[in-house]
Image (cartoon, rainbow, N blue to C red; front, side, top):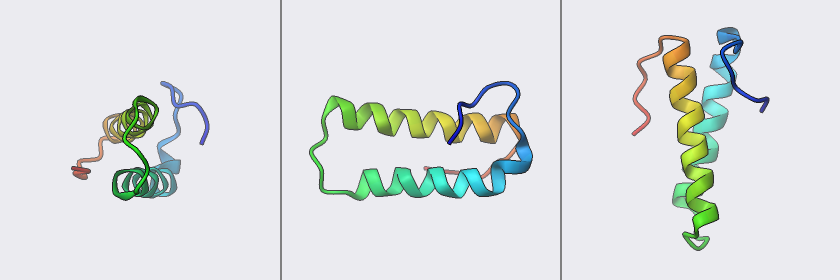
Length: 63
């Protein structure tokens, strides 16, 4: 995924959001050790999801 910024094209949200949500789910449900690196990855994905939802005025709940 490309770097998200104020120039993000919301036309990509329909493919980007499911991909990000799938990655987040895989991390959260995986068996890997919950290290700081793991938490950083989870937080990064959550932030990307929230950014797209806010930028594109989407109200889908990801929790």
